[in-house]
Length: 375
Image 1 (cartoon, rainbow, N blue to C red):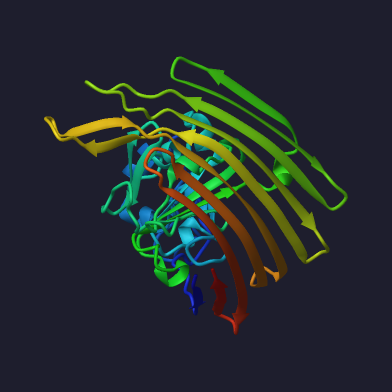
Image 2: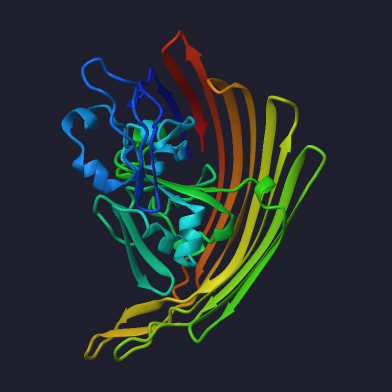
């Protein structure tokens, strides 16, 4: 249990003008800058070859910015910005990238981001870190899902086997490589990962998928609709993964999980809106126990199945007077149950978190972001 207060400001932008070029289909599409009294603007450079042939005066008056620079981000400064205007090493994994990659889990999706070390230990365990210090119980990385911190106080890290988001609902994953403790607290030593799901307005209708193989099976379904001033969605997801095969032993790392969730977005009036969302999951994750023996080889191995279950509910209310003047209040409750049935270890954790944030513009150039949080 603890509290946190953060204040940020003033902030300066690192890009002085909107980009006038995009990167599409591996080709540079450029637009000329305003004419200079010293040199005429370059001709229409259609592709990279013409760019390489340009002289120094042409390059000096030509902006080349990748389309990814315009990706929206909110994690770095706790306010809306873009990748190109953010003074931090940030990478955005988009929903399109996730869809085209064919990944089935959040840890596998994080492999798409440069600088993120993802090591899979067995079928249901991962070691994930940024800037080194990796290990299953690494504690220098903050992970959030829709603003809800998912670390466990047991070791100040993340149990990745229960972070089971329906990937078709993910809007983007923002990955910050570098310290973020001034904004997000003690866990954000080496980086922050913020997983943001789509608004229910973007997921109306019906969606379903299923797959069967000799190593894993999965199925999921989602339904959504509109209300008078809002929208909603409900989803269910299930998967089962077989245990792996070791040399001389069986890892006993089979994994099965059922997940239910919902989200409601409501526009109260022209400036107020709120979101309510919740999840519940239940399953089993196998692991292998190592215990001492009185005779050679003095170490024995055996299955130690664990029960994993939990749920959460999140409520967020936001008032937006303008892009530079707004506030948001968020509350969530989270319960986690993890029971190692052979060893007798059991964690039953209840977390309550309240977070308030205020953003306002002071004068012509300064933006102040302040807030407080209690967990």
